[in-house]
Length: 143
Image (cartoon, rainbow, N blue to C red; front, side, top):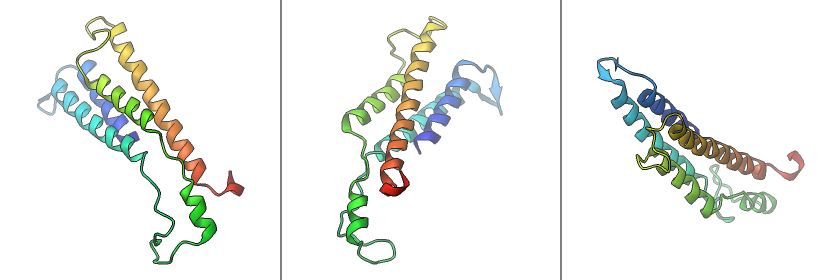
């Protein structure tokens, strides 16, 4: 969900800052702002989902069987993103969406570059966390 949110946020930003005129009878800037808002919400939801805990070891699997010893231990060791990194990623989303910046967007192109840099870090951080989570979910022999 984080990747979809990042894509919608990026398309919204392009519509807001680079495309002029009307799109389907609506102002491109308005569509872009709505897209950025929806993308930001999806992105925050995706980021928060990175922190989800695995099921407790005594939990039943979808088939109804109680998980066995080795499988339960492996699933309990699934990587979880730290609270600090989650907070940093959400702060970056808020910074990107906020009209208040360190360098205002009216100072082109430097004003856009600071948002772009924050967005690039966010994509890198999400990719890193997803990769770590997938790697830790694999059994030791497949790593």
